Amino acid sequence: MIPERKRKTKDPCPNCYLHRERCICESIPTLNLKTRLCLVVHAKELKRTTNTGRLAIKSLVNSEMRIRGVNSGNTQEALDLSDLLVPEYRTLLFYPSEDAVALTKDFIGEDPRPIQLIVPDGSWRQASKVHYRHHELKDVPRVMIKTPNTAVLHMRTETTPEGMATLEAIAQAMGIIEGDFVGQELMKLYNAKLENTLIGRGQLKKQDGQK
Image (cartoon, rainbow, N blue to C red; front, side, top):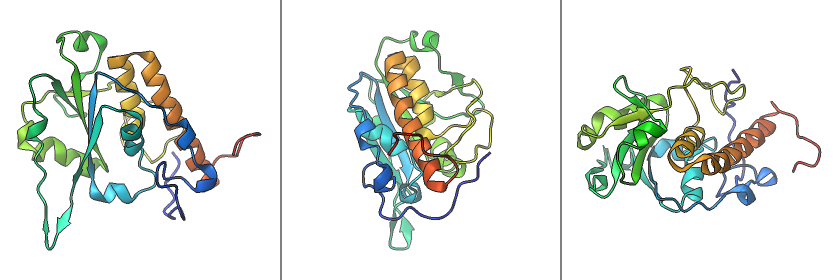
């Protein structure tokens, strides 16, 4: 696997977080879906230009971001997610815990309500805290993509066979929930982010005609 380079991107685009010469903002789709996405991201993750979850927020009209790990003085502000638990949505936590069930079309068909997908974003340790520290989510079903990730190139080193970048995982989930077109549009965006990131690291050659 390709190790993540530690050098920070200088003067990144404020929208896609790539070097301005490799900006992919023109590739960001606008998708207005029944499914609602809530990205729960750690504050430290927002400093990383390799973050892909924010691109999902920019693509999906019916989405929002909640930030964990915000320091206020010497203490960390608590984040309460209980207001997300509304009856008009079937709320699911997208996290590969031991009790997580496979996200499939059959599973989606068990409840007619639109889905609200809560997605932890950050390092494995940061994301796991949403799963076990937010007790307001204790009764929210956990779901995951159980098929192994066969991709050769990765944004960061993955620690499990099913490991994916956040946008990559959201693309697969939305493809199951909303249909192939939505999943493909989000995967195009993820691939653009991945390719231009690797080009910036010198780990992938720029193709003819590519910016």
